[in-house]
Length: 275
Picture 1 (tube, helix red, strand yellow):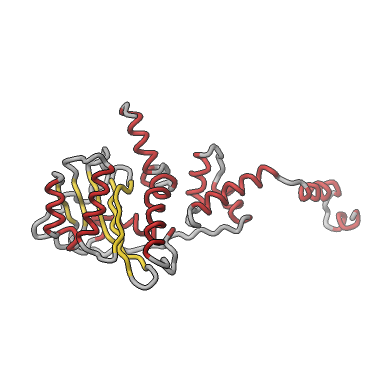
Picture 2: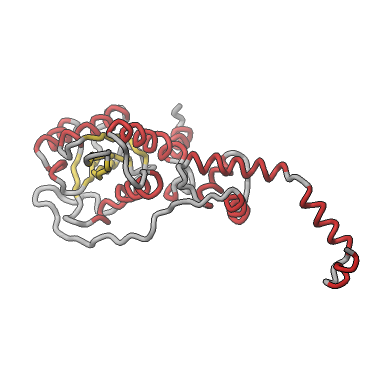
């Protein structure tokens, strides 16, 4: 060994020091790697470095991105993230309902503006449809429903859930696209009875309802199985957990400065003196 060290101009003490480090078990790093793996698995494999750094900080573990990246590499964790996406420009407003929101997505309090939309998921042998409503204040999911039919009954079910969970507020602006589920007389009557103000995006313009597009994009790229669900029951159970538990309570949101929607609303309640 002395000869080899001499050939590579490496002091023997340096060699033995490195060998000693190899034999030393870094218990703290093992613990950190275990926590990173646990958070990653809880995200269904979607959490990247930034998300994990934020979640670790909440747990009192302040680690940098490069450290977390190293721990992910050691644990062979590779997150699935959404790629770049281009939205269509679109143009025409609804003939009866104005676009009152006008992309003013930053609101000052809960229950000022809600947004809704529909997407589809594969459930074994046929498509099912998912309607979701979020409160723009903290981007919190407040209502959702799944059905085999993409009709107004589906969107009304999601609306009634949100209305009940939020304490039956009045004066809320409800924004959506121009889909028949939202422009139907049945849906408009629900909004009138609840004393809501309706707003609609311009036709084909996804940017007019960008926060809802972001929710569905996150769900489909980060969480939804690539091959879809085996059946409707499995879909309902998994979607409910993602929206109401993981998305609302565990997933850091960039709009909220790394806080979850629930954390943002709790912080507001503390500042306003509410329990």
